[in-house]
Image (cartoon, rainbow, N blue to C red; front, side, top):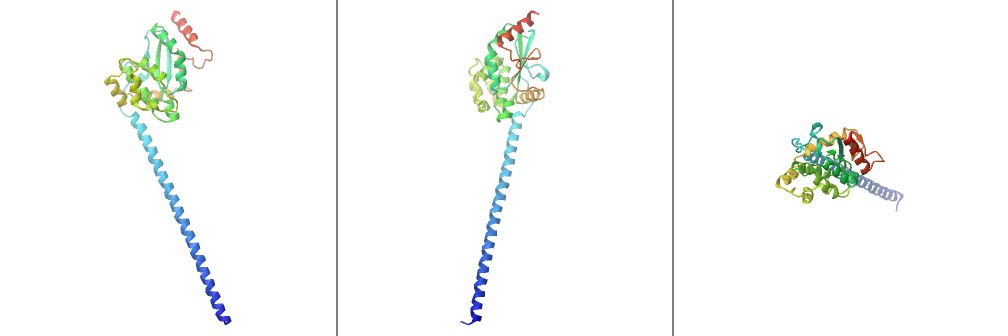
Length: 259
């Protein structure tokens, strides 16, 4: 074979090799573009889903607290945000801010319930309950809101104290949003004689007092309180008093009653 022919074949082989290299490079670039495009599409889709989910949650939150502000029957205090228990003539007032999903609130109620009942029944103490939804905000869900609305519905028919106690006695774990289900709240109402009326059911299912609960929670947030429960006796925070006991509370109330 002549030197010229060998040179021609080598040049052809080189051209073929170069062409294969160009094709490989083009194919690699195409794959990168396809994968990159897919990633962009996935990220865009995730962003859309995130926006829709956030909007859905926001819309649900708005729906939960939408509607006219309807205070429960007999509510008093600033903006009618307090549910009173006990005689109005009592010389001592216990102001309690609570959340029905709050474990610390349950601990307070379990420890002080019988003493508070004794003092309110005797006319020595009146209690003003304020309802908050702190755990809904911290843990997610709507159980605090729905339970507070149901308690306000119970107040409408004169059954708040008993239903209030039932809700704390049957409180689910903090992360369990069981009270978001109206069926659960109505089921627990069966533990209170005469509460499961059609009026109560409709009030719970319609969220009649949701906007009132939202306003109560807003007052809690603006009150400078450190958390729930917040318990004030005649304006003094006694929950922060490490020496406070049910017996000491009783003694303070009885002393004020005799003064």
